[in-house]
Length: 172
Image (cartoon, rainbow, N blue to C red; front, side, top):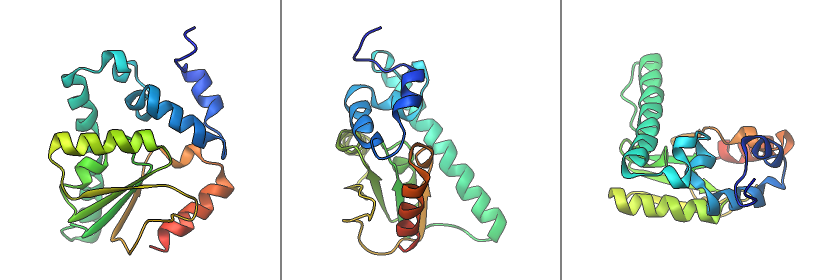
């Protein structure tokens, strides 16, 4: 096995508790799209323009489903002024939240993931997004938000730590 690649079995064993922070930084450096959606098509060596478009299309579907459920459930047109995407990774959801929000802030523990997210925003013409490196107390995440989103992130965080983070998100 190539020691620079993380197998799905190793992935599941490594992403546990506070020590997962360093692992996410490693994933962000080595294979960020696969770390977000662990399908071989999203491996770095398979990442063509078309595959990357598919990656972001899955994020668009996700956002559209959420907006539809909110609008159907509350009989409103939901267009949040400020949204936060906790565990934004490479920006798969954030890029698509930017289309329905006046402002969106991506929060991630990995500086490498944030760097990739910023690059994707630049490449895709997203100009209403900013990024914050995550801490448990969410230092640097200023102001209040109309919409707090997190998907495929909290399952990688120790529950005690996750409750604290969720409390801090909800305070905003």
